[in-house]
Length: 167
Image (cartoon, rainbow, N blue to C red; front, side, top):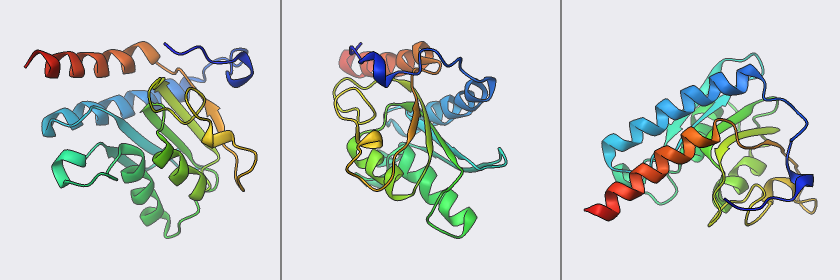
């Protein structure tokens, strides 16, 4: 587990029950990725009214597309549902800390909030390795709520990689 500076955590903010419920939906998406032998990461975009606008799971193996990360898939669906690329007022929920590509897509889509489960100490871009989502030199900043159902999200990934190393 990476050591995250206290200034980057929402330690004093209790996790809203909506974040816990949304993460349940993201975990279901992540489990769906297992059917295509892809890394079990799931995401969803919640609209300002609380409705699910887009869902995604890793589809790199299924489509042979290196950009088919769960976050990108969910963002594309949400933009299509709204009929525009700006996802103002939305929340992206994902089981793993976004990578730099996904963090860039989040910033470009103007998503104001990200809720994630497990930290990615090798490629995370929301506070562990990089902090693209809160980079002050960019034109959009994102509020980040890390560690929501962290143990469940991390266990799903750990089990996946342990089974693939055993093969």
